[in-house]
Length: 237
Image 1: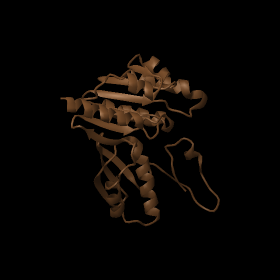
Image 2: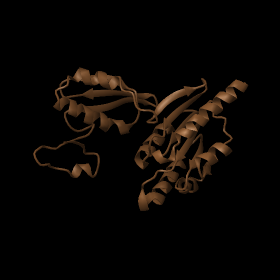
Image 3: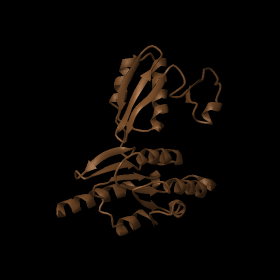
Image 4: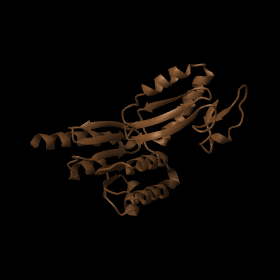
């Protein structure tokens, strides 16, 4: 059983019946990973396995993928997959639609679609990455669901983080994101996706557009809306 010991719950697992537990992370174990460079388009990584090392470009950014990469490489070692084969697989990685997938729309704007799902931790990592990018940004954030009694507190923490974001236009969507909006003292709150689409006045030109929310929020509807709006504005000239 190979586990990520950066997780405070998983690190408590010490043994299992009829097997062994291997606790690893991207800085612990026979595999070590260093970030040399990072943009929204990917990360340049130095990967060492104790004997060999290589520098590759992984086509997905963020600290949040490093433990996933480390887990995959450790499992590859157990299965005796050659190091070079594992590196090639990493370089050819393609994520599924809605998991930080990036596209340029109408040669004007960059659309970052991360609306497959959301959590507090992944959203904060995304916001930290976006803060490093230059230029105008539009953040479209939907509720993070299934947080139970902690939902209000967590959404307020998101608002505190967003208060420090600069050069951003921010749209908060949903009942829970209302707490983030009030705490941030920025942006506009919409009760629903339909409310946002009907009342949003942004042309989404020459900017970086980031969308993230829980799966049930269905923010992909806004992805389609943003694309069609940009196309319409460009065609009008």
